[in-house]
Amino acid sequence: MYANRVLSGMRPTGSLHLGHYHGVLKNWVNLQHEYECLFFVADWHALTTHYDTPEVIQDNVWEMVIDWLAAGVDPSQATLFIQSQVPEHAELHLLLSMITPLGWLERVPTYKDQQEKLSEKDLSTYGFLGYPLLQSADILIYRANQVPVGEDQVPHIEFTREMARRFNHLYGREPGFEQKAAAAVKKMGSKKARLYEELRTRYQEQGVDEALESAQALLNEQQNLSLGDRERLFGYLEGGGKMILAEPQALLTAASRMPGLDGQKMSKSYNNTISLREDADSVTKKIRTMPTDPARVRRTDPGSPEKCPVWQLHLVYSSEEVQTWVRAGCTSAGIGCLECKQPVIEGVLKEQEPMRERARMYQESPSLVRNLIADGCEKARDLARETMRDVREAMGLRYD
Ligand code: SF4
Image (cartoon, rainbow, N blue to C red; front, side):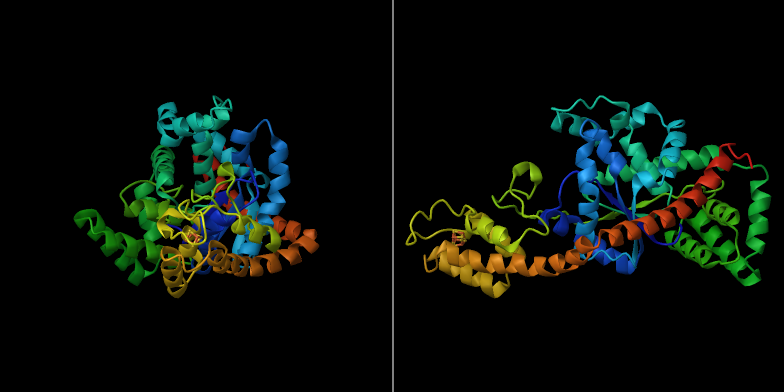
């Protein structure tokens, strides 16, 4: 409902690798050209699983921000901030917790999954159970309507939508709502008011989704409406009360299965990663020592690319021409494995070159990073305060 706003966060629990680049950061870089983007360091989320090793978080926050910048996230286009520096997230989390049925949290599929996966940690904590709700607060506080997620995170967005609906249902019913909404329609001017009413009727009587979208776009263009009136008219459109919290949509991102050095998905837990800014010698050494098709014991033994982890990397980094060369050379033993690995080494180094370049500037001047994050926190806080004013008022907590 509000302007196209994207929110996404990352937990600072380790240095970023090329899997993060291909899976998340490349997408962020594209999104920042298209939407108003807010990207945040999810340090409180990291504490839900790393509460006994907070030093991990401390060590990784600034390096992670440098990784983002190195990957091409542009602070002049996107707002970058740290979750814990916008305490309003915690306030909204607390207030939402008053109306969150316990069963809703226990049913979130990742709750049990993660507990089983991270069985070495005691995750029978209140914070861990509540982390989807904290995630909801992160999204709802910015009235973000687009949240980039993979398939496995869709239930979290659905949970957030349910929370927004529950909140609006409980607190959006102000006395005299219909009259106030009708008065707000008039403020749009006669032509636009007529159009709004037509679209609203078409949506409510015939269920035409395009009519709803057009009416929402019309409201987004209105400069002369107060925030309260805008919330009323969004709610009025759908036949409900005031829409204080906006329901987000999942912006589905295709699952990226960036292969690691052993052919499995690149992941810190498999110890098969190449860091985003790893130095060239180390990258070269790692790729040169990668395992290959076990059938190629001698240089003269033919192999099958499909059985080789290096081939997976060719699929990411090499042109069709090079891939054809690999296929022909591998299956006929026409090329050696070291020869075959060379274009992959070059591809990875070429991808990392601008990242190292961009990172250098920020590493040499840490105050630059601190300042841009301070600016981002300030901007985020302003947006969060706007929502919290309405939330507090709706919940009877306004005392000024
Ligand atoms: S030639 Fe290339 S694809 Fe074939 S086994 Fe060696 S590294 Fe793998």
